[in-house]
Length: 194
Image (tube, rainbow, N blue to C red; front, side):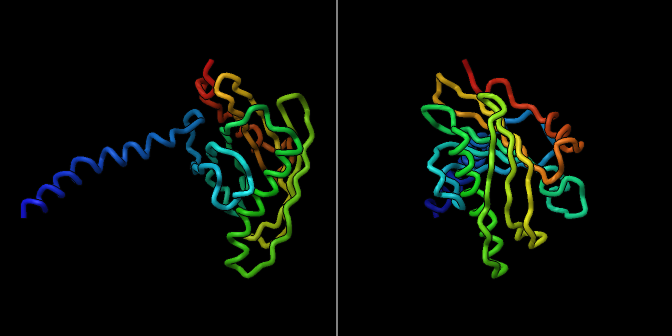
């Protein structure tokens, strides 16, 4: 009887500590937003071919998963990853192909669909920025091929040897209001401390 009381006491007082620790482990990289967030640690379970260590935070507007909404498939994510140099255009193209093939294969296997490989084409617009497009088979909602316009910005933190990359994706053209909504989501200043 005494051991049961002791175990109950230990669980009662240590459980909040463990939950609080898990919550703090995934603190947002972005300033406050009403968008939904998801966190992944590298290696990401659906894209283990990406040879990086770090974390991803993805943020989604409320209409992301609704085909009739203007925000459909428009979202952004941040990678904070260990690397001895900034990631190259070629590496990012390959990693995005691995990422979306793995992500979408989860749904395609459930639906019995054969996945069509993702292609990613990027171009440097400056040493730290990229523009491009991703062509993928969207097996979750439409079962059709989808083009995502892509903007990527990269900041390299020399002191921590980490690359901070923000990826913005949308099937909407770059003049669409969704890109202005993206601009309102800012990174926290301390993400790359001096």
